[in-house]
Length: 128
Image (tube, rainbow, N blue to C red; front, side):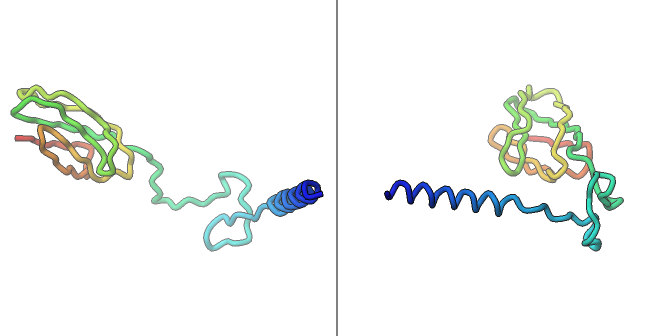
C-alpha cells in the first residue's frame, strides 16, 4: 500500500513540475525602452553603434634579457598564454592573440615577475 501511494505521489509531483515548466515563453524586448516588441530574428535586435564586436586582439610582444631562461606569459587570472626559451642574446618577438577583456599580463622569467599593461598592439619589456 505504501509503495502504491508513493508511486502515485511521485507521479503527481513530476506531472505538476512538467506542466508548470512548459509555460509559454515571454516576449523579449527589442530595446530596453520597448517592452512590447517581440524579437523574432537577429535583425530585430538593436545594438549600440559603439559596441565592440571583437573577442580578441593580436598583440605583438618583444621581450629582451641578458640571461637565458624560460619565459612564461600568463593572464593575471592564472592561465599561461605563452612559453618560450630566451637565449639571453637575441630579442624574442612573437604575436599573441589575447582575449579582448585582458588588460594586464604577467611575465615570469628567471624568478622575476613583471606586470605588463596591454594598452597597445605592440608591447616591449626588458628583463635585466
